[in-house]
Amino acid sequence: MDPFIEACIEANEEIAAALEKGFDASWYEKTEIGAGGDVSSRLDLFAESVFFKYLSSFGQIESEESGLMGEGETKIIIDPVDGSSNALSLFPYYGTSVAKVSANGILDAAVVCNLANHDIFLKSGNGDVLQGKLFSSGFDLRSVSSSPEIGLFEKAYAHPALVAALDAQSLKFRAPGAVALSLAYAHTVKYVLFVGPFRIYDLAAGLALCEGFEVIVEQDYVIVSTEKSIAEKIEELIKECREE
Image: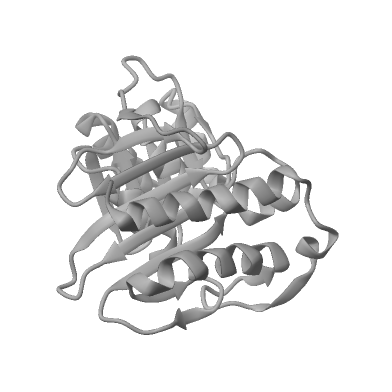
């Protein structure tokens, strides 16, 4: 296995092992506004420090919490805890997101991990997306759900008109609150939708795992689906809601 991917797995396993011992009281403490614009918790900073330990030798890290860290022509984009509000609420849908971009600007590796259930998704170079579990050596090709019944709509709470429009079209969804993780599960659901301003930390790794799907990325929304007709219908609904 690629050394960078191995290092990502090891970092995730260290973070997951720490979480399984119970949430340290200090992790709930808020610090200051991070590079991504959100207030960082001690949990975010703990996870960031683990990733820095394992990944800094591969290039310069760009983290949602501390911004640029270290040196190197290769850039490693990380969200140390994707869905940190979920994690700090003990809601089991949170994880990590890592993307590696070469000196030539090619995204050549991506890893997204669900720390709550230990699912981990990875892609290296031109290879297929693989799925496995932390603390297990086996990885398999992910399988696409043949008849998904729901989509995932991140930040749905901020878009009531679009929620109503989706409901009118029977496009059921859940809003779990961790966008990279939701993109990693795009193969299991009808669609993934994110509406609003986004940062590179939110999407880099997750979108890399969506290769081969229908992907629409605009300035303030992202739609992913295994079916082109569904992606186009959702984009149509977004535009209709904005015209009203």
